[in-house]
Image (cartoon, rainbow, N blue to C red; front, top):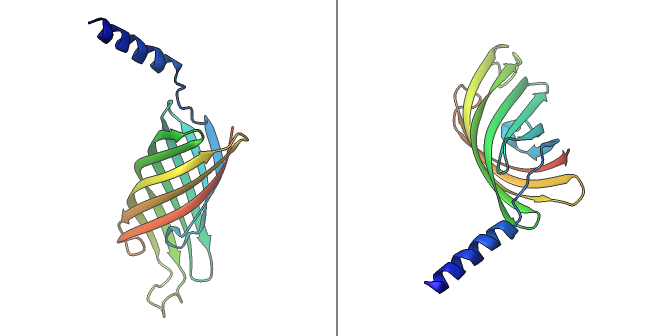
Length: 164
């Protein structure tokens, strides 16, 4: 019984000594990925607790064939690996809009607009530097509705964010 009490006291003492993981209150930057033709996205993260956060990404594209935007929101759980390394997973979704040029794809689209909804998952790894820089590599599968985003897409991206 004496050994059990000593072991319990040591476990409690070590749990008070270990540092809790802390994520930045705010992070703002760019997420560079394929993202179904959108390229770089403006990305914002907001801490909701010690291990949870909200990420909002806005991507847009303007070229000769179509104009489009996509807004993504994700709820993420963050776990510390060691030191500044964290891994995270999340779920969310978003909406987007595409305005096709009437000459796109040999006239298949006659200047029409399309609004689409999608669901997304997210898993990745990040490193929190001693300076206010956060670098992350993540994988985001998305499934959506509409002609533009109607199948399962896989997006791999590198993100650079300033923390404040």
